[in-house]
Amino acid sequence: MKILNLGSGTKTSNKPGVINIDWSIYLRLKKIKALRPLVPLFVRGERLERFMSLADHIIVYNLATGIPFDSDSVDAVYHSHMLEHLDRNVAERFLMEVKRVLKPGGIHRIVVPDFEKASRAYVAHIASCEANPIESDNHDSYIARLLEQSVRREGSGTSQQNSLRRFFENLVLGDARRRGETHQWMYDRINLRAKLLKFGYSDVHVQDYDKSLIPNWNEYGLDLDVNGNQYKPESLYIEARK
Image: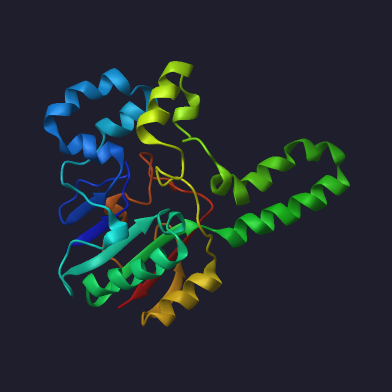
């Protein structure tokens, strides 16, 4: 079983058959053995823990330019909270590229922030604020679920560092868009299904976080945290066949 974990970031898997692919600074540093001992000098706390937990079998590649595998060569392709970071025209090319590398009948598993769920929560909270004005103090958090990552200017990790470290990280890595952190579009079960059908996928359906057509899916741990719980709550899970 060959599974591509695309745009893996620091959520990688060491399970046999899983190939983790991303262009993130974490994977680039992991790939260069000579630089690994220097990482603790510049990265600390949770970010260092994520770096140290990276799998060994990784490929550093810019997926916006394609997928470095032959046509009809992989059993399943998985990506989580990646598609929304691509410009819409790039996202469409990416969906076609995934279809190209999948074997006939192969599974494409997509995880994205669920725009429908976030929108319903926002509308419901308006009613809560009208019934209880004190709820208004927390209302911006519901708007943030819809917009914050589209308008963010500084990388989320960098914004928590001291001023000197922030200066150098922004100088070297650039702003949030340059790092690929910002959302360029949002998806729900309607528009994502329509796109997949448009590009020739079949059997498109919403899935649970711990259910999949990919055999023994939970053993790979990609949609689970270290305690076996859902890794990315408020997500939409969709699967389709080539």
